[in-house]
Length: 560
Image 1: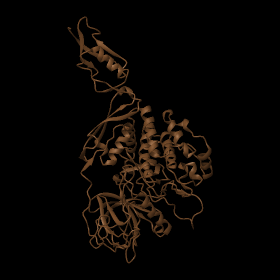
Image 2: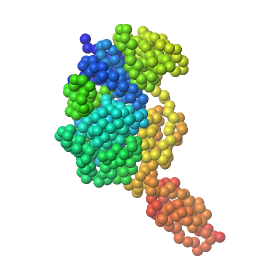
Image 3: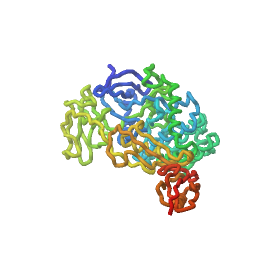
């Protein structure tokens, strides 16, 4: 009989292949749609693979960003192993490129930025993805994207051997150098190049050709639009030291170049372009309800060098061949439950002393034990009662006593799911680039659709814009659904003072010139008697304008 993860109801199969299958399912308690990946028996029987699988859970347990697919639950027991995760109603970037070829520079920049922000979250935790490529980027119907599949991710500095997908591997990956964020920057730039041009930067047909091209061939930046060539040269630099040190640094360079080349609205236009391309492929969206796909990706991850023993199925886990849904190979968080008298492995995750099931609406304690060394021994039923909502029959045998403030009860019972907070402390985003400000607000819990950015100083379309005001202000506590209004201006623009009411028009003119404005006129230019008091000015004060903007001060001559 086919094993189903307890607590879920299958809707339909999304894809299948040699490594397992992916199904669309509903979490019964909350009604949340999820994607569940079931591992094939061959992979589940491989001890080395399971070790790496659990290690991946440790690496991903703390990742929390809107730019990486969210991981809900990992269940491993005698009957099977599966991952429940966020269902992204989107399609693989690879499918979009196959449909449209080159996406255009603004859409390509949007893809690169979203992926870099996802990678930056991993880099902040000391994790290197090592396998960024179009197959591992999901594009949603609104043009946003999420990064998936940390199947061969390792800690920064790990000597993980020669691993990756050859067309996107950095020169140092071919020589087995320790993993570094610069390798992810290289792969993301190679994908960016493919979005810009419709082809990969190096098109070698064999490993030998690719290694030579990636390590010695000139960077073909002349094939890309001139405005973004600096990004291509930086990101595809042969020496890791010549690239940005990490994804976060590269985002700052990207926003500066994109703003200078395409103006402050480049990101909005890019998302719309991606959404338009995605709309041409409606049957590939999970929500479309089409027939399941089969097979694995055309470009599975490759680990070069001698295998540990006999060759086995590649580490890349199942995806639908046509795009469908791409899923990571392991669940962040922790392991839940094995049956019989076996004790489950504690796989780390956010709480290294607890075995926890993460439901789509919040964490629920299943069992826990702790010691000074964070070791544990526990058991939980692998029957349907060991669902994410937890059953009172779940039990634990603590190996040592633990403080109530840090560890759940040694005999836990089902507890209510933890709802997300209804209010949020608004972070301060003044001085940030608009895209970075949006990302910071979204990371705090605000929805993208509730964040608006108004751009001042329209004459500075090629300037580098930064946020100069926000409403509500930083530090305010507001509803999660509140609207956030940002205003941004170019660094080349100036705030126009308001000189209305100034008793001396000449002094008002001098004040505006000292503020940096170069074209200030008086009307009338002089009084034949008394003095001139400013009655109005055009444009009105309080707005950001180019220094060369014509300004007129209207005055009234007062007898003296």
